[in-house]
Length: 217
Image 1 (cartoon, rainbow, N blue to C red):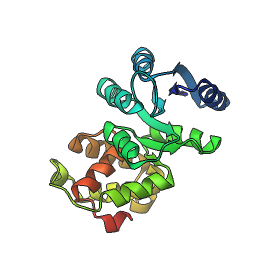
Image 2 (cartoon, one colour):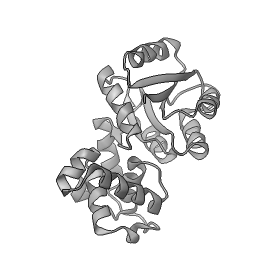
Image 3 (cartoon, one colour):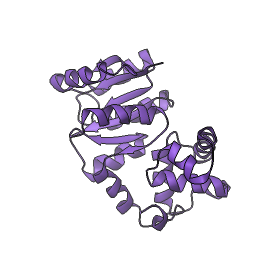
Image 4 (cartoon, helix red, strand yellow):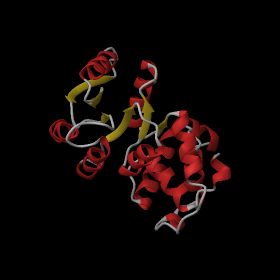
């Protein structure tokens, strides 16, 4: 079954170009387009897509606020930021609002397709410059997070490898587990930490200081 996608982008030319790229992939079906943040929310509520490609700077409602509201109403919908901005304030606001990935518009078309399929599969996707920002930002430990101490040793091992950017199949190979077992471990981690994606879980762990930076750098 094709991954159902809504494109939220206020520039018509960019939106149409993105759609043409995605329409060439039989594993992806574009089910809606939005030219502003409010329309993005309406399209998501109407179509219940698997993934939303979200720009940051949009009329009426920013991509940050739209992401927050979409994740509240449709927690199973993955948000993949696709933007020209890599400023810290935008990066961390989007990730903390619940985005599962953050790409710059300089991304190659085949990498964009791969990223959409990855976030739909529960992976986290960050542009290299964004990943570096995340690691630098969370070098200072914060207060303990509820649920962190309840993670099992295996769950912590899975999350450390996820923080290194390994996809589920690579985590499974590294730990001698099945792909399905890794998915089950991640699902338990998300539940314990009250998050909905690998990216949120990693950000939470790094921010709170219990995911050792030296193990993920």
